[in-house]
Image (cartoon, rainbow, N blue to C red; front, side, top):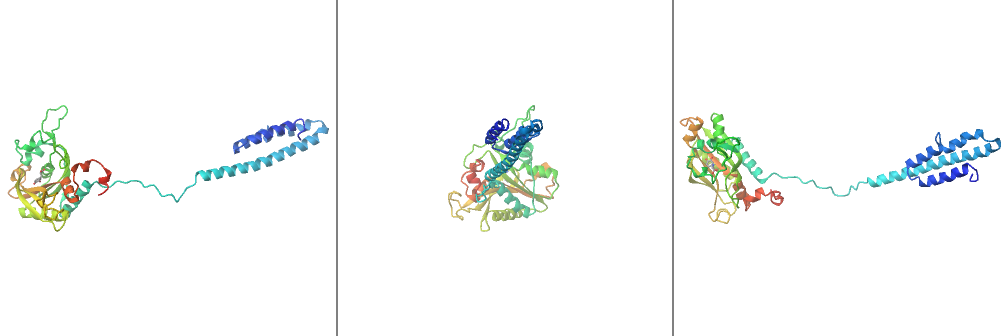
Length: 347
Ligand code: DAH
């Protein structure tokens, strides 16, 4: 074949082409170039009939030999290439199922949210429902209707964030300084009897330190019914304190003053850190102050149109951060808002 004037050079080129063919596509290109309808070998076979008769036999035999040989070579090469490609893709896509999986980090409920929920659950169990009110409030709801006179120190610019309303010269818009305005909003919109608690954020113009934050959380409570007395207030808060801090806690009421309650009290539980003996958390007193409370002042009923002759009620308010500090011994209120996962993931 090598000495054949046409097939010889053709065979030489074919060998070079085959050497360079490394994948299925280049093998197919060779098949088309040599054996296709217009292929080089096909052309030789088609030209045989025009050859002088003495050349036909030898050329035809050689050309058919070349055609058959090339077909067989391409088929076996194609098979090898496919096998190699399959092996390569199996290698590339191999899964090592013995590798430990990657953990997706997931969040936890914030300690303050958990405590609010715990407080809600206790009061829902006592027949209360949860109410809400706006954080941007009016002076009327935050102070006036809560019987707080204009001269009261909590109204001062030092204590309260007042809000400028664009395009208006109103001076009575503020960030609520406590959750007590929710009491007024609930009573305005609902006839008695009322049993609600109102958790939420409150704001005061305080410099942040271990026990102060300009934004903090409170849970407000209000009960209005026929014949409610100081005894009901005490029973409710003792029940709450024991469920929250432990059945063996003692509770005491100290006389206090709030403009919207009369009489008013501050409520302490015995220190859960030292059991009442006196320690750093309770500053040696054995008692922790947890909330303010009192019987709703008849003046407040007058603002919302409740008949103070028929209805009486009690109210209370507690700081959520303070309860968290006391219950879990967290030493600094700022930890709650630093978003440090080392603290947050513990609860
Ligand atoms: N609003 C009071 C405060 O922020 C807490 C408080 C005291 C709420 C007595 C009450 C209450 O409902 O009766 O300090």
